Image (cartoon, rainbow, N blue to C red; front, side, top):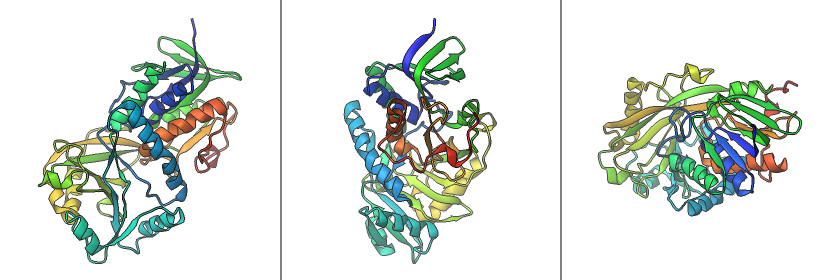
Length: 385
């Protein structure tokens, strides 16, 4: 017997769990399906921390974060647990660096409050840094970290409390859209729904191709390093900011880091991009590179000397990249009740609660008040009939 729902969400990571929450909040009867266990380590939405920030080199993203922050605060209050930790955020580099200039111009255009700091200013405020002569900084006070796994599980739990059904360890075999609804086949069951949201992360290329949407997505298995600083207290939230180093070179593209949420976890340091890509999750090697952990430690020794203590943990995390590194948030052009979120390109987690709301809006109403102008699927291709 086919079980019917108002809405089905496939993929229970950061975006899918949020979409299920907002659908349930809107009174929809929701089914959330996940191929692995909830809070699994195979994709992009597991862990202790991700950066949250207003600071973007495009004012559209700054304005979207103006929508996202209140949603995080509301979710945190409803969940009754700490999801957001304010640390402040520092972007530093030489002021003639292209990315530094673009960021400053974008923040000015968006009229975002920030401080432009000299090297001496940074040294006085954050003596943990050892910056080169001539470097400067852009400081924004509302930057911080999101407790990643807590956010995913809070969305899923609160969706369940509002009546959503959550089934993990349930891979989807086939999605079959029709004129008035969608059928979803799993190994054991057949479900139907009026509307569906597809948020399957690095598995999006194959699933969307089956719906006639062939996207040029690539998977980048990045590596995260967690280091025990010489003085843990100096690298706790409130004493040390999230940071982005505007530099490229032998260490990769834009090294960044996050204060430790617990001294036993360590300070997170990695680079924004710079790893080889693959076409499918089946090609991913999750084995961490030990030489890389020393490589990024060498960068830390140069710019943040006391953070480069013992390696406490390291693991791989998947980025799913679009060619322009902008998101995909859209409806299927032939089946508007099929809605997709994909290609969050390594900078999507801070938006996940907003993205879930945007996708729920599109599924229920066919439109959203939030700006999706950067995120249309037709920028890559015409969709097959």
